[in-house]
Image (cartoon, rainbow, N blue to C red):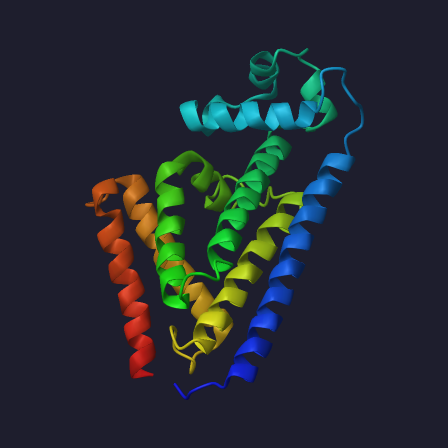
Length: 237
């Protein structure tokens, strides 16, 4: 890859920062709009947040099949009708939980990407490991975020799409930055390269979650291998 002067680098980083801020604002607005759509306020605080936290806990401990608005009301200590003021049915609840997962993951990715005290290479490696590690540590949430329960059944709400799509846009933004820094092949379309890198990490995550000849003790080595392969491809581009 040809050398880039300081001015070009600063301009590129400014563009990336602007795109990052735009993605963050989109997600923040989507989450805020979702909360502002609440039809009723409750005396014990933000019931919607309490319900989502309880739902995420139940999902993690007992799986998606254990979720229902009735059980959620019991977990949160509210009336059986209270959750319906925030989620019209179980499908809407699942979309809201998945949206929370995407928002949490985006915050993690943004934190990694903006570590200016680390080299782009170190940030890329950390991103790879954090993605796979997040999936392995939160298998039920990850499955809900990317599995067939929502997407193949066309059950995603508008609020979920408003949070999930900017997450992928941010992946493309990071890919362009790493291409510019010489870490990823710059002779490839950024969108397609983002899809391939994401697909690779998703595949590793699925192997770990499903326990197919891989377990948590292999995460670091598998992630290092994936990062090396992509960066090696850049050197040969």
